[in-house]
Image (cartoon, rainbow over all chains, first blue to last red; front, side, top):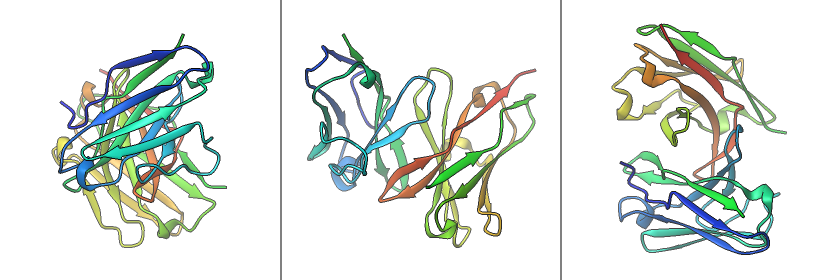
Length: 108
Length: 117
C-alpha cells in the first residue's frame, strides 16, 4: 500500500483541463518537495514538475503543479491526445523515496 | 546533452543474480547522485535506492531485504546495480536516474530483467 494516494484514472476531452491529486501526510508531502512524472506507453518516465511547482526547460506552461499541506496537484490544460499517459507523484518519506500508484489519463 | 545508457535485457533463472549498468555522459558524473527505480509489468514505479557517485555511499529500500548493491566506476562514468537471489517477482524494467533538485531529472532507457525457470 502506497503512502501517496492518487486516483487510478481521470479523463477529459481534448482542449479541456484535468487535475490529478496526490495525497500524503506530514512525513512526506507535508515536509518535502513533490515531483511529477509522465510515462507514455512503452517509454521511460519523464520529469514534468519538480520542487512542487517548477517546470524543467521544455515542459510547456499548460502543465502546472501546486501543493497545499499534505496534498499536491498536477494540472494540465489544453488537453491533447498526446497527453494520454500514466502520471506519478513522488517525494521523500523518512529518507526513502516513494511514488504514488499512478494515475492513467485518458483523453476522450 | 545528458544521456544515461543502460545495459541490455537479461533473462535469469530463480536464485541467480543480475547486474545492470548505467553509463552517463554529457555532465560531470560525480556531481549528481544516481537513483534506481524498477517497474514490474503493469505495475507502478518502485524506488530501489541510490548511490552518491562522489563518495560511493549508498542507501537502498528496505523492501529489497538487503539483496541489492549499488556501485560506481568514476573512471568509466558508470553506475551499477546488482540484485541477488532473484525470484519471479523481480521481473521488471530497471531504470537509472540522474538525481537533481530532489527529482529524477534524467532517466535511462530501462533494462528489462526477466526471471524465469
